[in-house]
Image (cartoon, rainbow, N blue to C red; front, side):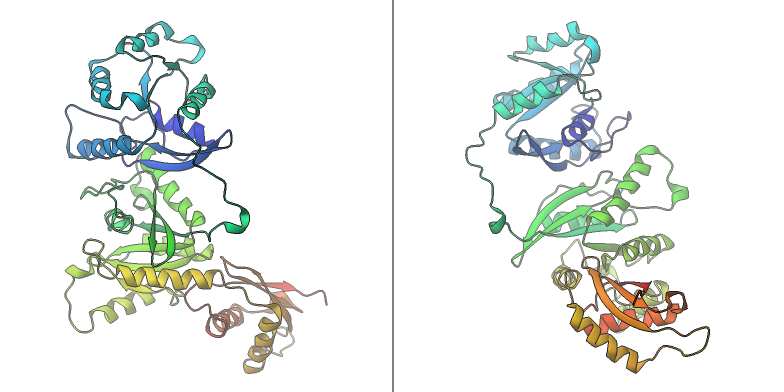
Length: 429
């Protein structure tokens, strides 16, 4: 019907996946927006199918009904053309919610099928909005109707001085069926993400929030990422792209690994993307409760992971069970410590005092081709932690010496859990 297209138009960005294939949206997709200075929380729901439903359809409908009950306004979106028996059944189903219903008929751009569209009034609606979600026709009038029917009197803007600290943003990434949606639902105490044995159930990125031990979190449940060669349709292509984009939108990436299946090259690529962007990385070994619990089981798996992921020894490895909750507190406690390190900023004087010590412990080489002097250093940014070292001959600074500096930053300055970006520049002094 164009629900996701309308959702994206309200947001002025492509937040929900749109595709001509029916049933693309499954989980409710939520986002905040501001219309004429008024804050709204928009929810794009899955298609409402009442007949010939399989198990997946039933789960989609359950979530849509839950969303309808909580909503202040429900926009019922129909398609231009004759009203179908399925439309009639849906309208009948929504009668108990008539007080908060707004009827809109989509795909009426340029006056298309308007005479048929007005037939919606015969179902007892006082008004109907003829819109085009794709082209924007009459969407402004629909927005104004929504605003006019919501009471904003209890809402006040928080002054800058009273604004709370931003939440820790966590992205759940990994292969399909590793338990991302199960963990997301456990953390948010909801059933927002549909959980199914069928791989690829999650398509859009589903965002939820929760509070744990005085810390606020935003969790992003993403589509499972398979190897590029196995991605065969447009919907999965866009799902994977959205999943990868969440790395940039997050503070911490929790890489979900099925403990029984082990890790793959795809896991390595996801971790590398997070590392390159300076995001915190936690490797969650899910379904650990189903693994043989012999004495050295975790150490054996950890050693394999450290070997497989190369230069990522800093990334914590935590065994969890998203299903029964074991290990989740440790995961969140690690995320809090990691977030503190991500936002740590070292004063320039302290950094250069440490640098002087490091240069004494491991002096730069003195050969005619390899000689260089590191003059001073600064921290360019926090989250990501990015340091710049100014050298007399930046090209002469070897990768091994850069690795030495990076390791010293981690060990001596409090960045033990996160990736550290090190840049070498020529000094003008």
